[in-house]
Structures are given as C-alpha cells and as structure tokens.
Image 1: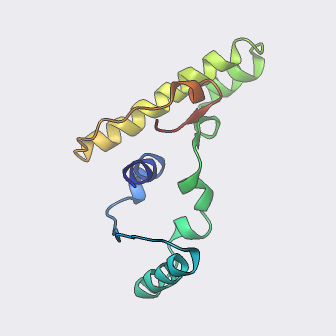
Image 2: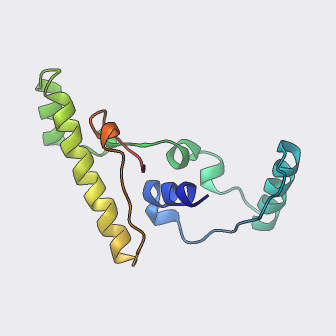
Length: 126
C-alpha cells in the first residue's frame, strides 16, 4: 500500500492530498467493489483518477509528453543509440521537478526511481 500511495503522489503530485485506508483480512472482488461504490457515494462524484485520468494515476510517467521543443528536436534528429541517453536526460529533469515540488510540500519520504525505465522515457518508483 505504501508504494502504491507514493506512486500516486509522484504521478499526480498536485492532486494528492490525503488517503483513507481500510484493513482487509480476506479481500474478495465483490466486497472490494462494494467498498468502492460506498466510497464513491460518500464523495457524490467520481474522482478523475477513477474515470478519465485513470491511466495517469496507474501508469508510469511518459517523459516524452513533457519534453521541451529543443528536446523534441534533438530526440527526433538523434540516432537510435543516442535517443536513450536523451530520454534519460529528460527523465532526470522531470524527476528533479517532481522531487522539488514534493520537497516544497515537506515530503520526508526518500524516493528512488527505477533507473532502467529512464532510458525508455518512463519514470516510476522502485
């Protein structure tokens, strides 16, 4: 549960403010679905992460979407051996921006990103 919450915080830092946890001894799909429906009824609306923006909350960050125009041009003109290095550089820049934002919110938790994913242009926690 800890890693899942941290993943949400890293992927959507502006939209994460709190969480509610329930201890489950023997989970089963119908019971979990009932808990979800009860939670949605309490909210009286469907949160974006459970509807339209679901992929943003659940999948690794694609740093290609956050490339600057100069980075896009360099990546498009680079050979296949240089492209992973450029993606890794962009991933490091995006990672630094995320960490800076979370540090400003006083996050004390150490975050370790998966190094191997950076060369493919994705960011996710280990």
